[in-house]
Length: 150
Image 1 (cartoon, rainbow, N blue to C red):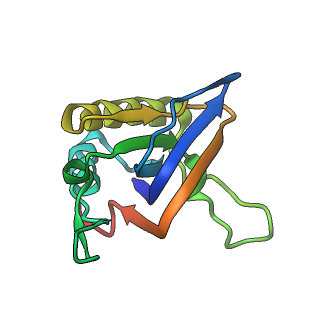
Image 2 (image 1 turned 90 degrees about the horizontal axis):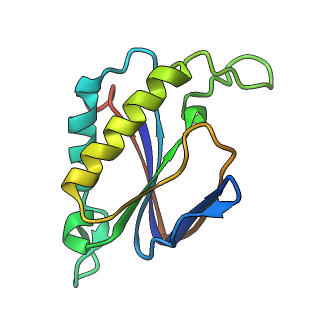
């Protein structure tokens, strides 16, 4: 499982002729799954994400988590996080999880996040989305469950 975390001043997602509410300050996260991912990785990744200290304290150090900050979490399903560009010029997505299982894991991940933080907004799985953000910092961090030994 990969989560590309971006600290934002604001973000929102457009899809199917509608738009999510604007998030205000918080985190915009692109979320992707590999075939070997299982539900067992969801809780530890949610915990890592929600308690990741990426907001600045009064001294200007990144010491505050999303929960302490009180910001909104925006989750966007993104299979292209598993693009393989080693051969040729066209990305291959063979290393991404099949859509049916990925949707199930994404929905379960959303639910875990909703149970553990005050505000979650989500994009739509499988939709053509326009993701808008005002990056803060910029702060952009990649979380990969294989690298975190989850």
